[in-house]
Length: 274
Image 1 (tube, helix red, strand yellow):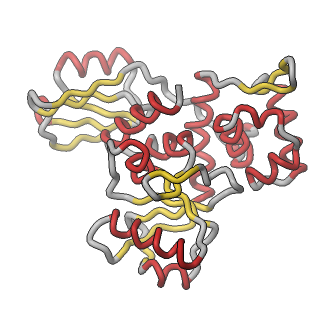
Image 2 (spheres, helix red, strand yellow; image 1 turned 120 degrees about the horizontal axis):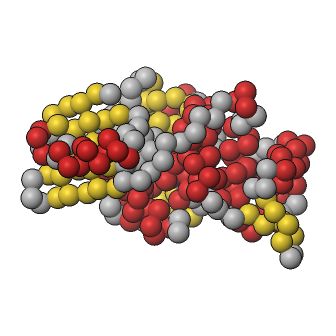
């Protein structure tokens, strides 16, 4: 558990992996600001601003040894984003997710066995539950995202939005497929939060792409390039930017330790993920 100075009550902001409901309640009563990984937040800035979200459960651990793999989480995101795709053929699911047809068939059978997919009057049916949501968020941060990261970079621009503008221009000229996620995607959808970091899905990031985007490799850089998987990551254009589906944006925002990112995740959930 770490802490740093803030302008909130008592001048302390506690950032931690998880606060139990009892401890979180004590912190609120004591006027201590905090944020944890599941999304419990209490933030007060003088008398001008106050934000509290409680009751988020600690996500379960999802080790790959237990049978949860990146492909498992990718297919689960597909069903979360398009519930009707539970009725799709194995071929269509493979094309959408980038997973092999054989693996899709195996995973679909596993999901049926686990009752994540159930028989409906007109075929298989998928319905989001709190347990599936926890599995998505935990699986994204613990298993899928680490496998998707192609690298981190820094840009030559003064700010992230200028880099995003160059990315859009290059994509138009070079027929480059991209999809924003995280804070800049949330900003395009809701104008609520713009992260100093830029998270973007690309098929690859070779030297030609790095030079065109004026990117330099940097292990702590603000640009996080994630490998696009299938057609799933290309949701729609918002504010002239291609953005990932809300479920992927939401999961990415929840990987941040920035309380504002977690506020943005909650705003996104209320508008798009009810």
